[in-house]
Length: 134
Image (cartoon, rainbow, N blue to C red; front, side, top):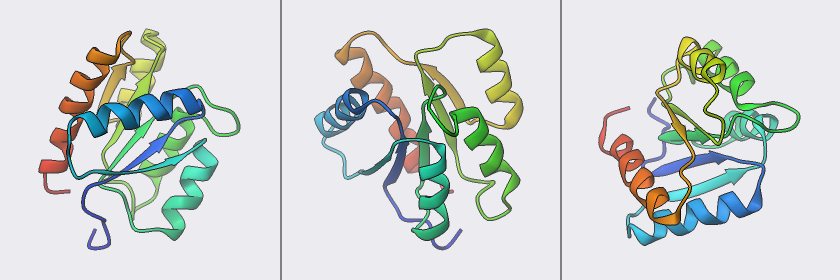
């Protein structure tokens, strides 16, 4: 994965308010992490085919066109992308979603926290992926 761009997070999220909150939480941590946001799985696929690979993908599950589970399945089927860490980040805590994401190879499954302070804590935990060799 020599074309992986260091400190690049691909955020796949269809709600502009959630994108803004995640970006605010990451900026509060004062880390040098660039966030590239796309609105759904189809846009994520197009991004991955044309751009430097992110170090981490953070994706919602419930999105139009191609949801997070479908995106995860597609990523894990592509030899050039299969080793990318993918974190499912959703308001859904449904066991079926968690089991399906885990079975498909998600690196983690995080239920979206209820407060901004908790979101900052979660983003701090997520940044540990940027300290790992991909």
